[in-house]
Length: 320
Image 1 (cartoon, rainbow, N blue to C red):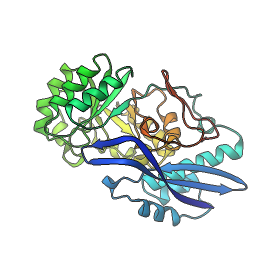
Image 2: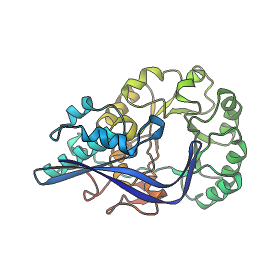
Image 3: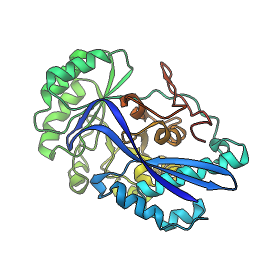
Image 4: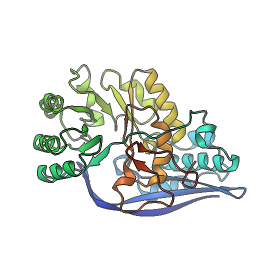
């Protein structure tokens, strides 16, 4: 039996990116029950890819009850629906076998990974205050993507002078804006910039001087995306809601590394259940950005543990 449920988690603070603001995370929870065991997965439908809670639930409702993980890869395209079901099937297999998912996947035992903490888009003054509040964290991620981002960059660096900083433009810059900002990104010690240009307009990155490493987010979904990234991006951001689950995420990680790309593992704003499979993908990644639960005012039971060592692998009571 495959069941879907809509869950809403309040955010600790309003979260803003260049495309808009939100005060809650709306997710779809999938449960797959067979022979008395239940596996769970979570996805966050993304309007950027024309996904809604209704459309994703409809995709899942059309699946055969006994579908396998291998069959699922062909039955649904990469996206949120396949992610939730794929993650639930991994969890189900772990629960039925009494083994952890990392064992089933032939992976080394996972450990904690330092994760970025995201500062949402705001006025320079408020972003400086956010940065100062979280200056103790080793890695801060700044949401930018407007024509007026220089004061925000300066403000965050002033608020957190010692933190490692990465920048996510969420497709919000033009080639001209990025060219103007790039020297300042390097001057301010920014470690990488995520998706500076819209996915369909990123040819301008080809052959561009690499003042700062550039990471593909919206331009990279699954292995089929890799061929178009050469010469434009140094790194790829793997998100399970883009790849369509852990199965493809692990395959993309290996293929991207073989193609010479560094790895970033990111997330949508969701609960610990959504992050748990991604922690396995993030092992050894150059950048981990799995802070979704840190942005929530409430989370799942048996949530992921975060401390100075980073985000820890899940307890079996949560997933896997």
